[in-house]
Image (cartoon, rainbow, N blue to C red; front, top):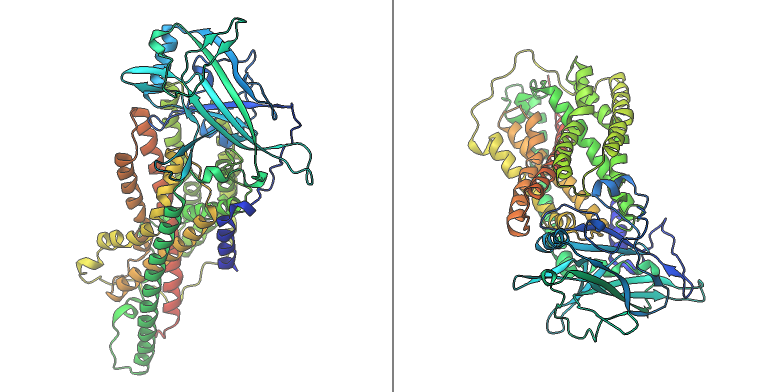
Length: 615
């Protein structure tokens, strides 16, 4: 059923026109009704530091109202505010005057900085972000980019986009609803030197020549104007986000992800087939050997008295596994809700907020898992183990987040999280997550220990010298390749979404990738642990964790490559943000994959030693 559900979700997202987001109600406008245009933060891929729209000398309203924001929007640095643009349904305007204002030397420097760093302006109409349409040369495909640039730099001169052509599409269907629905929002920015008509209104000229005209350093005042063109459209309201999906190279994305999944499925099937055949032969041989007392024990059966020996640093291992399972549950539930539409880019900030809440409530899972394993190892310091489970991973992430936020705060960016929000995060952590971790640990310690099929000898057996290909370092480096290969293509698109300010929408496919990742981590950890036990090395606990977790090293290595080839960050705070958050992502990935590999290997080892006869 789980595989069928994943497949159905993936197929459902393949045809977005049939996909309707629950919880989002369409708004109908009668002709002439006002349609509010809101302004959002200014963003740049070169700095990764957002700023409020009105830090630049645009035309502010008499009173600036900030729209109510959820926790996710605040953490993402969104700052949605009202504007003085007057849009009315199905009412076209040409060269409408917004305002004229003097620009000081400081204003010019502010514009220059924003243009140098390629800042983009982000607007919203009816919750749709403004998009610029691009067409490739020679009649190529049409793509859309989020927002529009503050201005241009041409031959050392700075040109501000002071005239915006606003194109809005509306859909009507009198049989279903009255009025019109906004289904498209496109912008085309121009840099103009407006003149004055005899009545004092601005004249924008023919606007047929897109060559920039308003040279910032040669002017002492700036006039902001705009056009509005309403166009009827057959696009239904439920499909109005389709254009934003065209920001990605769709065919390349689908082909690459299917190709990588096929490779991983093939390798996983091959590994599973070899393992099952070899293991079945071993079990049959060992059970026959038990019938013959003169036979000598060899291979993995020889270490049955040490295979479940308590690992070194068992407290840290229990904490890591518990946190990894907590994160896996959080990621899985988030993806399910995202795939069915309850959490999506349409609900701005909802995905991040949903992840935070799910992680908070999944604390009970972390406490329970760490307690079960720690009790199995006969650990006595359960209070410290539970405290570490509640504080180690969240504390590390919060510490990095707090330090990075201080740097952002120093730049006066809107991305700086207010201390009131910090306090809210601490309330979620200490008020809900920590008590739930202790509650889960209480239930975990209350239950009987996990039963083990063989007894552990009092004196540990000496481990023979191992060949280099069985060593921990080699096994982890090899074991981390396969999980990384499974997520490599999807990782590129996710990183583009995070750092290039693009929309990510293919949650159905991402669910399929996560399922494949879990299977791959389990199989590679089991396989390498089996080879290790066959060579009479029973120290498999930590290695089964690090075999899959080593894929995080490749993730962070790829992030360095992505930074050098795709990013053009020119501000040290932006670089700190990039590597700080990529470290957090890699650390999270290591805990998830390590917990999957460890848990799968534990149940595998328990099963095979329970299937043979031990004297």
